[in-house]
Length: 223
Image (cartoon, rainbow, N blue to C red; front, side, top):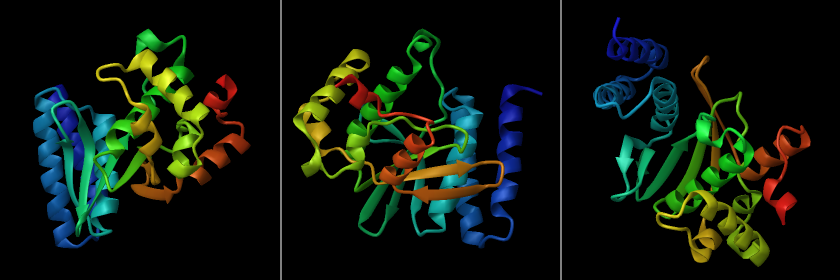
């Protein structure tokens, strides 16, 4: 069986789970998204672990009344995982699987914190609401600055985030103003095994993780 065939087979399996007992309109929308992902995989744009999370999250949001597009270009540089529209508002969702590139193997926490900070800064500017999707077995170590309203952020916090992001992302570099204004509103915990999504606010998510000792406030430790 080829990689293309395995990809389509796995999407068909997850789609069968997701569409059991749903309204025909929901099933039709999910089938269209699946067909789009199959097309992108043939172009070597998407991978299976990421795509199944997108479909599970898409079903959750479709049932909340959103129209969904997957792998949607926001501009000439950025493509978001899910672009969601309901009424006059929009929601952008980025899926995180926890992958660390080999070149960052010696500083995985630093790299991941910078990547998440950069995503929140860059993508939330295109969104009425911005969210990160994550599997249950992975904890997102994003800076807790972004869980606070912009008015409550300190100059020290903003400058520390810029310094961190500039190590990894300089094309283009993030600005102090964009860091000040960036915001994440939701975390979606995506359980592919059971085809479920749990929605949680970012501050609660981080507080629980820190209390359990799963992560710590990396940027506070550096300031």
